[in-house]
Image (tube, rainbow, N blue to C red; front, side, top):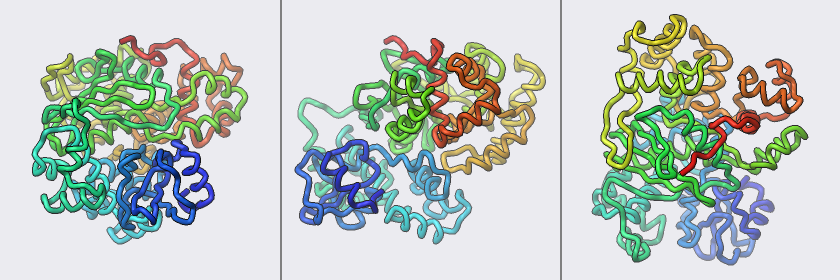
Amino acid sequence: MHEDVERCVRAVRSRDARFDGWFFTGVVTTGIYCRPSCPVVPPKPENMRFYPSAAAAQQAGFRACKRCRPDTSPGSPEWNHRADVVARAMRLIADGVVDREGVPGLAGRLGYSTRQIERQLNAELGAGPLALARAQRAQTARLLIETTPLPMGDIAFAAGFASIRTFNDTVREVFALTPTQLRDRVAKGHPPAGSGTLSLRLPFRAPLCPDNLFGHLTATAVPGVEEWRDGAFRRTMRLPHGHGIAALSPRPDHVACTLTLSDLRDLTIAISRCRWMLDLDADPVAVDELLRADPVMAPLVDKAPGRRVPRTMDAPEFAVRAVLGQQVSVAAARTHAARLVTAYGDPITDPGGGLTHLFPTPAALAELDPEALAFPKTRRTTLTTLVDALAGGEIDLGVGSDWDEARTRLSALPGFGPWTVETIAMRALGDPDAFIPGDLGIKTAAKGLGLPTTPAALTRHAAQWRPWRAYAVQYLWATSDHPINLLPAS
């Protein structure tokens, strides 16, 4: 979009928050860059320069605006619905792969050379993987500076910088303030949190309907791993350097997020996974506009616009849970999952609630005794085969995975039909066009709305909902009074 100058100028002049994260505006007369919704008086069009990423604006010599804080805007929805190598790279960078494994590690995961990855990212985003990761580190540093009492040296390494000097130089360059000046700008009367706990806001593009999002996560919550407590969905997280607990509460203009981490180096990844699980980088205006074009869907969208797809923080975990949920009730699936958690999960301490374990890894589940599973033999085989494939690296369900290849490999496993594969594609892989026409709830909704009820006929009708069929599923499910559609009572 950044190449459409006229459209970008209109968005800046109208301070249209819908385009925050889609592009960034550099102002040549001031040397700062802003989000489109910046509250300051818009500059003259001839003084505007448009960039596809914060990293590109920083590379061009612009520093972040202190009013609109463009580095904290929602991420581009482009990386949600695209499955090409650039989108996969961006999802992996957000998950901290460059910080942990470097550019060669990123390229290796994508199956390309480092030169090819750098060329493609520079061509589309105006910045290479190192610059994109640097911009992310700068935002992490800012969060730690403003919300914790940690010494600056600890913050530098927790944010992923290799040295304190690099940390100081980057903060000054990006924010035009020293780290100490950034901390001094924090409003008095708002003391920083403890060294392992951070409270922050997760922005999103309005509108957002929290009912099905938090309702689904809570209704299917695995005891010991997830819970709804005091108006927040809470769950444990397995992270690269340790573990954490996230508490997420819906608010009118943001999601309140409290993170308790055993290692602050995992902050960026924890935030990224929370945003991914809640689908906060979606573009609800584009989704709802397309779905409203179908007269059958229009009333559902108008009733509660901005529905998101409830995803997962751990793709292998969700794949296991999808198998446990085959042809059983939500309550039965939770019971089966809770037994696996108790037997094979890693125990943790949760002073603020009832969380007790991390969900077991595929390697841990590979040790389970199939005879101890309280369901039919065929499903035992399905589960153990999946676990072996995940533990052996035969199937990649991570944020940078190839959606088509993952579907193909899942479909080859015994007991994996279209419902299981597409459910995993929708909620674990994040494919916004995943569709499950054979789902009982979808069939019931279709019948009530006068839509075709056979999978083939409904799929033909749903062609007009592409590429947002996963969102159409949320609206169809919402026609029932199932708990997955209801925001839990506080």
